Length: 146
Figure 1 (cartoon, rainbow, N blue to C red):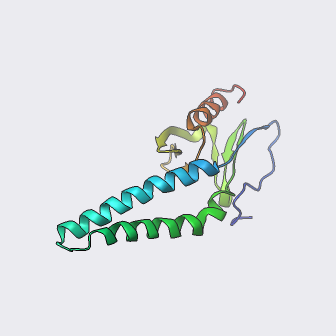
Figure 2: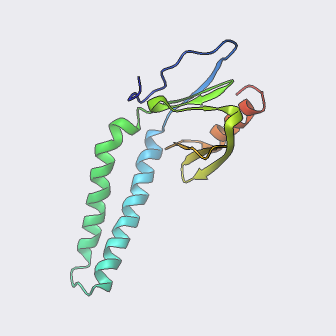
């Protein structure tokens, strides 16, 4: 199913599931706390430089914006799953990347971005241990076990 938050596939001949990659709830909330802190500071700075005497409202606005987003999307973001097999990385909404098509894997905060040879980009977000996840993908690319 294309709109699914988890991979929906059949394994090919000789392909094995190595691991499933899930977002981490604590990492999700920690990332949103950092985003809120940044949004609060930016909001206050903008109001300060505009000469607004109520600079504190920038903090309230920044916190409210990120809090609404965090609670609104948490139910979906925390259900996302990526599957690593001996041949592919498969994710939500029909995303599939053959291991041989991976050009590079970049770190972005608590996320990993898989960049393909054709330039497609796939983001595995809110990982508890992005280094271990990257290592598992690299081992699978090299033909080893996860």
